[in-house]
Length: 294
Image (cartoon, rainbow, N blue to C red; front, side, top):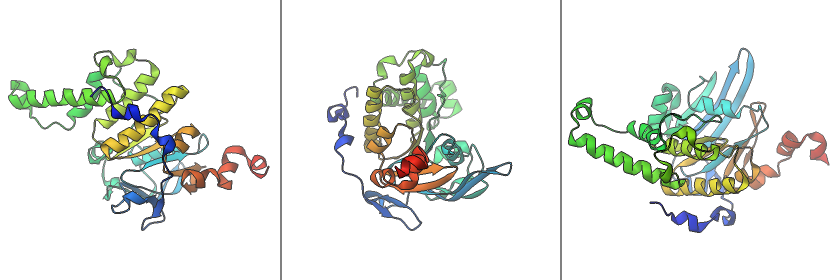
């Protein structure tokens, strides 16, 4: 699948009407189209303290099953800390995390990944000495079910699943036009391509929700526009939720449906892009009091 129909759609997100957000039983809203199902991710009163210092407090959010949601805020607001809580890198001091209705606090990081949460990092974490293809195959092998005996004796089940994994890996790589680089060492790719490879590797774990930590960092405007198209395409093709942290406001306002704004570890605003961008507390957090009253 090297030629994608989404290429011809070219930046269809620019023409999309703003999604209507509707209330769910907690204090949150999700896209109207997702309201028949429970949110794929929900946090209630989530918080963490480090040595008596409150880093995150009273974090409440719900994300619909096919929502593209954004988490924004000034540097040091606690955004990556939230992702670390959601993936159990940190243990919360208080609160609840529900992943697909299940208590995420009963799971460790690998179990959470199996349950449907995948993420990328601010600092790219690839198997740098392995090929592009091998990076994806490692992620896909988490889902394989052949036995050690199948592998050792190279039984038909092993070869069949290996063939299927390679085909799936090449299909995933083609989303970001990386299929022609499959045999190259990951470390040899340009920075932007490494970022895209990390997203593909996260997708290979078959997530229900994909967490992207500053996916556009280091990208030029044309790469960022292509990334926006690809994020929308990934959501539409795989019917998954995407939750992203990003400083590029054009990206956030262009593709996110629900946005939460974090400042000093607390949510100061939540809503659609237009609601958030016109919120006085948000303007003050980003621009300062004087600018917000100007």
